[in-house]
Amino acid sequence: MSAVAAVLKRELRSYFLTPVAYVFIVIFLFAANWFAFGFGGLYERGQADLHPFFTFHPWLFLFLVPALSMRLWAEERKSGSVELLLTLPLEPWQAVVGKFLAAWAFIALAVALTFPIWITVNYLGAPDNGAIFAAYIGSILTAGGFLAVGTCVSATTKNQVIAFVIAVLICVILLFAGFPPVLDAFSAWLPPALVDGIASLSFLTHFQAISKGVIDLRDLVYFGLLIGACLYANTLVLGLKQAD
Amino acid sequence: MIDCKGLTKQYGPLKAVDDLTFSVGPGEVLGFLGPNGAGKSTTMRIIAGFLTPTAGRVTVCGHDVETEALEAKRRIGYLPEGAPCYPEMTPLSFLNFVADVRGIRGAQRASRLDDVIGLLHLESVLGQTIDTLSKGFRRRVGLAQAILHDPEVLILDEPTDGLDPNQKYDVRQLIRNMAANKIVVISTHALEEVDAVCNRALIIAHGRILADDTPRGLEARSRFHNAVTIKLKDASQAKAVNAAIAALREVAGTELDEKAGRLTAFPAANRLPLGPISQLAERERWDLAELHLESGRLDEVFRTVTGGASA
Image (cartoon, rainbow over all chains, first blue to last red):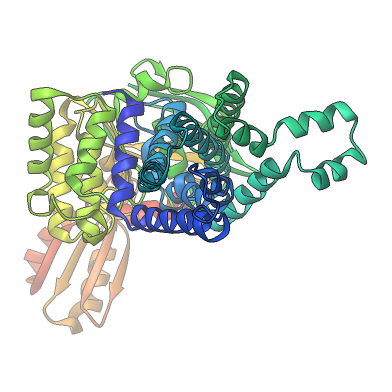
């Protein structure tokens, strides 16, 4: 078994050995459905689609994903097990990728467990199932983006609270980039080209594009690059800590 | 073979390890001694590949720990200080994880797992989560992980810390049994451990090597080496006996505990006072409760060499 798979298996199993998994899944399912019906008016709209359901996902992930990612490295550093992990014969990136994939698979599972709502709209009407499927993909990709940011931040500290707060902060910036008030704040002191660059970094833009039912290569590349860059930075941070 | 050349680790203004050069060969069990903060753990972490040195180079079995990290790590079994584990796992799932990463498969895996579980007596706790285990069991799980792949090099940071005397005995026995064709480096505060398992001792303080010798060689540096201690049944005679012994040519000086009737005679240079003292005791018909030859005291050598240094 490759080192990535070994780390992935261990991490994934650990979620279910601690209350983390159950608390996360229950809260996510409860909040996702409550927002969809309570604020999104999923039922009252009288339309057979899941738009009111998916639209709240980025906002849920904003807090739930950093809560999951904050422990990934900070906890290992605190308990000292990182010393054990990094002296096993694996490349640091293999540990980074293994941990990331385990957490991502776990979030994907939580998202997949919302399937009753999909069945419900199919029972009530005739939704565009292709669009719903695309929105699920978009939701999972967005969560992956948040997760990659959070994992990288977690590697910089032993303190999980710091890891959480900083990850939320960065995710807020990534989410809001593209919102006029945020861009106004930047355009005062940055050249227009950079401001446009910031706008295209927005999570929301790419998530909304996919959740409309169109999986555009550009959006996939965006999430791919974001995740890749964060995991690369995560590996660099591990190396820097060793030389510290 | 472990080869450390000019190893230096700087933490800001502090030099934790300062230009350390030494090598360890097969069959050697090297005991790392030194006060807290001497740089023992830092040096071991560098050898194990967890820390990168500021300067200098380490090779393990010919593989540079920085540039050929995986090759070096495959040959090393490492027990970090405090034996950290994943507390939510059971010893069995933890050892399986280590076997996964180390690529130990099939029949070999089953037999290695059986071996280490038996060697470290983990059978009774295999299914319990690690955070419910006693300190001694956790340490043994850490040791099991370190020897799982039967490594050529064992780096054990305080392997018996927190164990009870029986467990200490077991672990020392285990290290001795494995040591024959391996390279073992252990750090310890328990000086009797050096006598019990090591055939070479390195005393370091402030990141520098202060002594590199066999345990016997270190003991020979003690002023107690070849000294003779006697205890009289009747403490009131102690003063007279002390005077008679101090007059011997072979004795450089004595230390007397009048109340206990115990005295220690230190040898003059290159002299052995044991013979003359026992003859004298027989001739004078001293009523002795005890008479023995001192081999030297490591703790005293340790204090002298490190100059009471601590950080």
